[in-house]
Length: 77
Image (cartoon, rainbow, N blue to C red; front, side, top):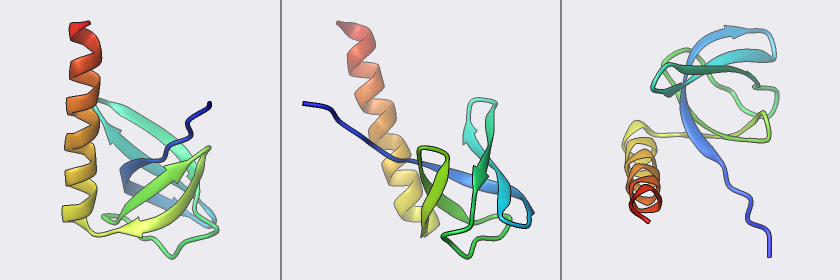
C-alpha cells in the first residue's frame, strides 16, 4: 500500500500561478497556485508541487504539529 499526503505551508510570495511556500525549518519551495486563490500570508495544503486547498491558520498549525509528532516518533525507533 502506498500513502500519499499533502503538507501545509505558508505562502510568502505570489507571481502569477506560481508562489513560494515556506514549509518551516528553512524549507521554501516554488508551488503551483493555479487551483487555489491564495495570497501571501495564507496557508495552503501542497501535494506533488500543487497547492490543493487554502487552510485557515489554526488548521494548518494543528496539522504541522501532528506531522512533527509523527516524525518525532519515527526518530525514536
